[in-house]
Amino acid sequence: MLICTTKKELREAIAAQRAGGKSVGFVPTMGALHQGHASLFKRARAENEIFVASVFVNPIQFNNPDDLKNYPRDFEADRRLLDAEGCDIVFHPSVEEMYPEGEKVEKYSFGSLETVMEGAQRPGHFAGVGVVVGLLFRLVEPTRAYFGEKDFQQVAVIKELVRQMGIPTQIVPCPIKRGEDGLALSSRNALLTPGNRAKAPFIYETLKASLALASRPCKEVKDFVESRIASCPLMKLEYFEIADPDSLQSVPDDKPAAGNQGFIVVWMGSVRLIDNIHYGAL
Image (tube, rainbow, N blue to C red):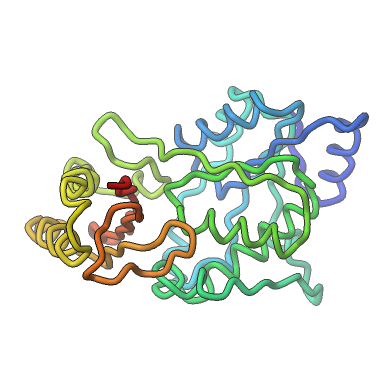
């Protein structure tokens, strides 16, 4: 496995390996890798001739300085996991390498996709995601890029990014990977206290329980989820929203939840946890 820390090294490494038009599978990450990431790596490895990953904590997608400071980092552990999953090339640049002083970056606007839910709660977040993923796509030129559906809204933004960039990269959404207790795997889970970690699966239990109400108006589903989360003193609900899975626009309260996606954000102490679930068609 080759570790590249500069754009020049990365371009040269990929050019050397992709001779003859070999397919490139790419998984961009912010490190603190876990088995959720590993599920993406396995697909990238199985479905492509070359598997490239990046490990870069992107400062411009954080709107909270404390969140950036507290984000877990352990590149040595990340390197071991990537090596075990058969990665060919890892790109691990510094902030200065990605964003040289005085160098302009391509910026993108994602319209309503970046103003609802996560976009509303974290202003500038998706603009920052667009900048870094756009840069990485220009460098790697992947055949396929893999993203987890835990960050469902991000997947929609990345699909729009590819459309705007006019590149042939195929975006491959991958199902949420969960622990045995149902908690969506996340780098942030490592920051939970033992007591909060033990209770955290209640988020997904609540989402699953709400599936029984899929035929009911969204207002009833929201009331159910909000009251369940409120019953847990360790949890503070930031939002629960039911939205169209394509446009991400909120579904009117009087319409049934069926066919739409439920999105939840819960705080446990200083840790922000996200999850989502699909309300199947009637």
